[in-house]
Length: 96
Image (tube, rainbow, N blue to C red; front, side, top):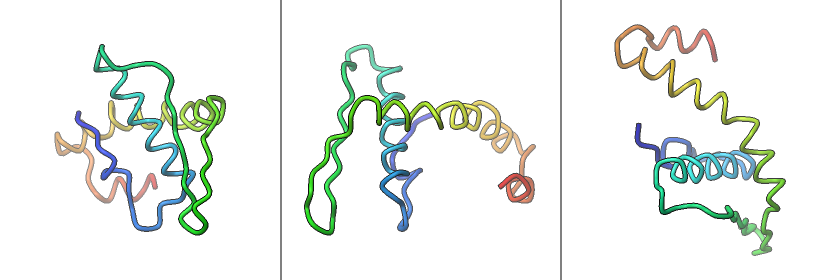
């Protein structure tokens, strides 16, 4: 399944959510592209004052590791059920 940031973006996205989405998507690319790898770098630029902060590897890993199992479960289990018609909007509302 192809991933893109637009699937995770919304107008009220927080920096915390954006960090998680970016870390997840970068890892997904690293898993499928053998020529991609190395250290993940994420830099935040504060839109209010222009302050720049580079996240530490620990910050990136902590953000990513909390949500990866849930996002993987969603892709493996829920999305295929939606595509097969076994999971509708009502069921989704029940679990959210």
